Length: 114
Length: 116
Image (cartoon, rainbow over all chains, first blue to last red; front, side, top):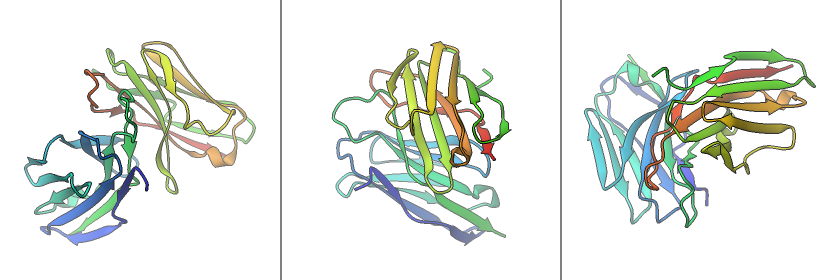
């Protein structure tokens, strides 16, 4: 099993729609998870951190399901500016602390249309 | 803070030439990461340093790739000789350790490398 797997994209949605991405991870001991956003031809940037059951920031909600080992990102009332690639990020599958190393998923592309 | 600085932003070279990519991490950060991103393989970690010491270079493709971090404010990634399959965007990122927790990685703008 890959350390992190994401929904294949692209997701094409109209403005105002609600869209959700899922991401599964293999390290059952992971305590920290992240969603990064990457705009076209730009660098990835942190969108949200998830340390417990979930996190909410405005229109964005990240949820964690430890039993099933997946995390999700929900975007409500989507805007044209939400168009980007969303990367699911998890710690590596090792027992010992790898000191900051993170594993990035392949990313899910979102395109919000007018 | 200026953020992570990378140079050059774009590099076009011919197969067989040496390429050197440069990175200046955010001041005070003790982790530095080099990534490569392509459409086919996504974002791949090549190597990372902690306090200027290479910790994990298992992602370095082959001996043609080498990375150094001579001090806390500078790192290089060198490809010699370069090949067309090395064409990609190379990102440098840095982060601050915090008692074993995983902290946000701050990425530079990347170097877009094209090897002809």
